[in-house]
Image (cartoon, rainbow, N blue to C red; front, side):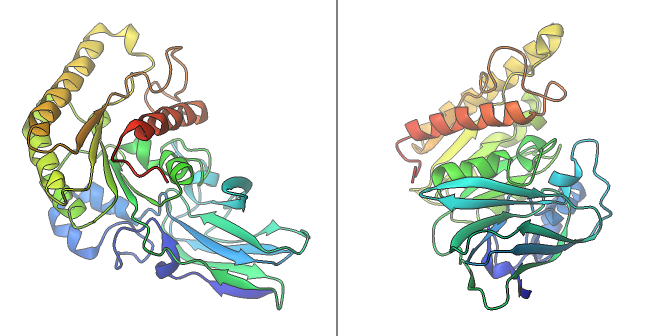
Length: 336
């Protein structure tokens, strides 16, 4: 086979040209301003992907990940360390194959004896593990070209483990990946499990980017007191990045088992009310600041999660479909 090595420059969904590690999510200078837990999670390649064009009948993917492939309580091997391939059919990306990792170094056939035809293939990187290297193998002499990210402005999505991809089924089936396919633009995944705490250092870091939109989704990791302390400062910094960049704050979806615990329902409602009040105050100064209420994003049948909080596959698709509908209503969100 002919082997084609990936480089960071052809990876979609990276916010910074120089990251540490090279397929990580944050630049080296971010370390001094972030909590240690957040900094450690910058190694994950969550939401990133590459695209290539080839007419090869056979395609094999060879990749190396840093940590032992064992899965986690909230990630199976397929999502934690595996790959997903999609193929562009007409104007829609169609799922083709999921590749499961079984070791630190993997070599797995993806396409076998297909008709010789040029295809546009999207390859999603692992959700959780740190990618060290990746190569695409094609038939000798077959055409092959990496697609370049170009100058399409991405969406930046900052959030919790739900956005990071906890309990995800496979690498291409997370919320940011679904949004990216729906709106045909990269979505930079800055979800940090248990750690969307609205630190001022994170706001400064996000302010270095110039996306088409910021989606800010911290409520699963916050309470009303934290919102009172940090939300106005955080949102003010982002709203000041550019007058034409919308900043959209999302409230969190209802916890599926919250009806059992009245005290938790009251606390949940209080933080939603706090967030809505802060946004309303800031909207007088920043007209492109919006609020999307995600309370009913996963339906009203109390299904859709693994543990009452993190969405299973049903919940991921319900959440994504709800958010896509709401974003399409926004006059400043770029829908195509």
